[in-house]
Amino acid sequence: MLQTIAAFDRLGEENAFAVLARATALAHEGRDIINLGIGQPDFSTPQHIVEAAIKALRDGHHGYTPANGLLATREAVARRTLALTGIEVSPENIMIMPGGKPTMFAAILMFGEPGAEILYPDPGFPIYRSMIEFTGAKPIPVPMREANGFAFSAEETLSLITPKTRLLILNSPANPTGGVTPRAEIEKLVKGLEAHPHVAIMSDEIYDVMTYDGETHCSLLQFPEIRDRLIILNGWSKTWAMTGWRMGWSIWPNSPASNRLYDKVRKLAVNCWSCVNAPSQYAGIAAIDGPQDEVDKMMRAFDRRRKTVVEGLNGLPNVSCITPKGAFYAFPNIEKTGWKAKKLASALLEEAGVALIGGPDFGVLGEGYIRLSYANSEENILRALERIGDFLERTKAG
Image (tube, rainbow, N blue to C red; front, top):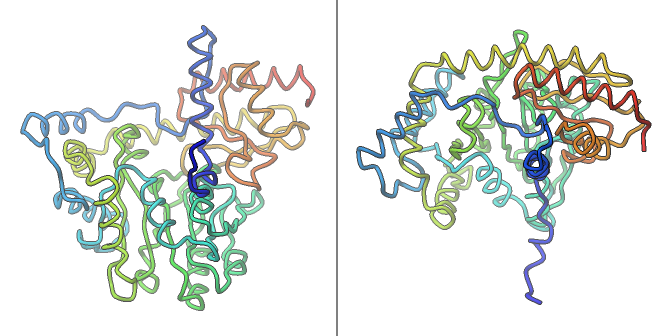
């Protein structure tokens, strides 16, 4: 048998893709499957973005690009950052990445090693913990509690920091809960971090414009006191329905105080993926600088679906759901049904034809919850809710 290094045995997975594969297989067998599992918009990429990529190909942009991305693409990201946060960021601090995960990979790899501790949200995006364990570092969950609107508590987060803590991962608006952490809580956290200058911060802000009910996203970029240890993760996937384009960006410090993090990630790009493909980068520029009508239309649809989902879930037997303030996920509490979350999710897929994700796939604190993505049509959402309700009425927890 071939011998691999132990780190690869510590890699986890993102179960949403396993559920997608099973749902697709059942659909190929002729089953009517409603997929509320995968976290991607059900809208097409706006046409002017597609046309920009086609034009780039026709104009001969077929070669390598710089490892950190085309200057024009980085300048577009800087313009968007200024418009949304009021903060000027140099293109020389911006990395164009092949999706959002490479930023997680790079940041966690930089700070994770045996003996180190990395704090991450739980329930949270599963790749955080997977990558932490891959590096040999100890994953320390930061609880995202339903009673707190699935926002983090600054006091609780700060209490988990030790001399071994290297990196703190934050995510708001959040996957899988839809929680949005209020600015006041973020301010408390930033103030508390003054006592822990050895801790770097990675803020996953991929859902930054996806907020509802008057909520606004508070970017960690707005706090200059942590800028020299702050990594921002963002990208095109969610906002412009570009998940398959694999286009992300991140903002890194590059001062001596930061130990030149930007140059380190640039070197990692050279060694790992070389660069991001040119036509997609031109599409990314068009997405940022072009009309935002389709984004606004998508967000209005998500808001309508969100209300439908919450109302429908709260009408199901023994299910309750707080109203998510961001992203496009609901995270209902199913404890009173008597079902374990993953077992319920599996049964709903196999027996009711509804694909969703069990809460434990997002962390040890996810038991008692399931995640529904409302990135599907309102018609399908209503059909799915009816099927879930019928299933819960006719079955007992097994």
